[in-house]
Length: 111
Length: 123
Image (cartoon, rainbow over all chains, first blue to last red; front, side, top):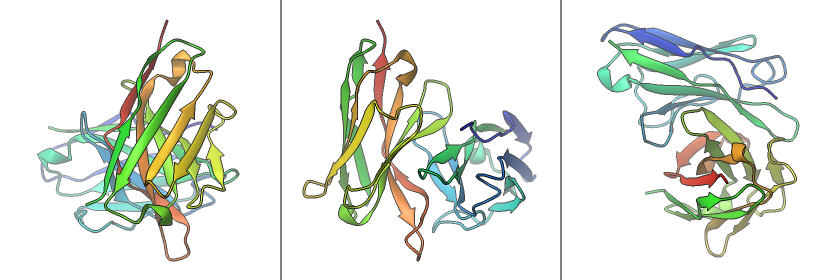
């Protein structure tokens, strides 16, 4: 199964909002609400940011929000801060043998 | 505080084997499914394998099925990944990951990650 499709990079200025898309198929994102998002700073382990499409784990800023429409999930970051500069990965349950698919990752640059 | 500490990575020739270990602490290990996720140098994340709480059910990505074996020892709070018939493309940082569940006991994501152990396959 192929990875989910994300843009390679996005950028924004401090205070602005950006959205990262994550496109799958009717067999993964389109069929399940088990979409999660992860933030990874260089040299660090990924951090759990969003689960079940739009829910935030305890301690994650409400500047991070998620949504889904059809086969595409999205992560929106509002009020961009310099520390938001990182790689972001989406992930979806893909059914079958309980496979999980990740997106290729999106590098966010805060200008 | 949840801690996941991987070990066992190293350099191995193609066709060789490595056994990764993960020591878990800070949570009731036996109550959670666990996974391994890898990241090739400069590349994205790839889910590799998962194991149920009791170790009875195991799952593998197609790319490693038949070559990797996941296991756990709940008495020792340890997770393992036996990697055989290794290929150059298996070179990656391997993360030990705790799965989070919702009220219906369905996995909703990966909430804690170790720092990873690097497995390098090269001649």
